[in-house]
Length: 297
Image 1 (cartoon, helix red, strand yellow):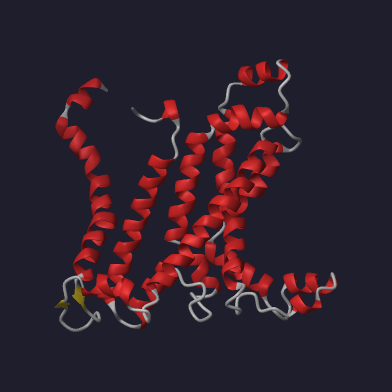
Image 2 (cartoon, rainbow, N blue to C red):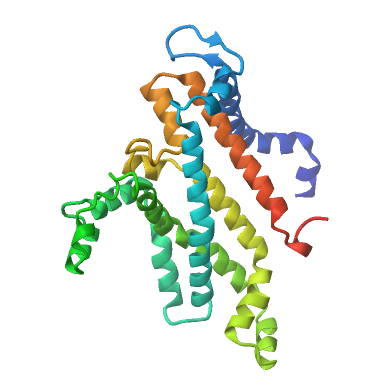
């Protein structure tokens, strides 16, 4: 094994397949998107170099709808951080206490993560259906007749919340699993010592477990924010960005510009903007959430 590690040719040959895939699938498309973002191209005729015009249009043209899409994505990110993650943390703390059928509950909450997003979108389309959807049926049975006829995905006032709920349902188990693993890594001796000193469950959770869980929480916050900024498939299946662009996010707007309006240059500029926003918020969160001894000095 040591001889292989010292053999630079062997290391190169072992890394070559992964490096080729990485460059071909990730690096090359990003470079091509950067090139296209400086051009006016409809995908057929000869591209025309326009400099930074596409990037200027991102934030100056009201008809493009980019600021609105960014605002929607940021709102989804805020909801994810302040609703989805606390729910995940609460479930992780509850299940990690050694309740009955612990593994069963873990599996049940994680099943939506394993399901295809298209399947989840179709499922929630049926739930939200204004005529026969289970949500309106239940509201009608409970006496909320005014709400029972609401087109949740067709109303600009309710569509964003209606889109967030399936996202919450799908990924709450993912974050819960990460936090559950972090909680299980906490030494039982520390918790036992706290109990001997008379600490309550609330004090143990807030003063011992959660502080020790900060590195995991940081990762979950990064995943939640960047996931919201690049969200696409579930929103596209549920609303396609409508109605009246009320649920539009940068990814759905990018697809609309490229495939519906044949504006490959402008769509590529949106793609680069998404990449920049994801990197910016990931770095900002990493710097903003201090994990003391866990961070490299």
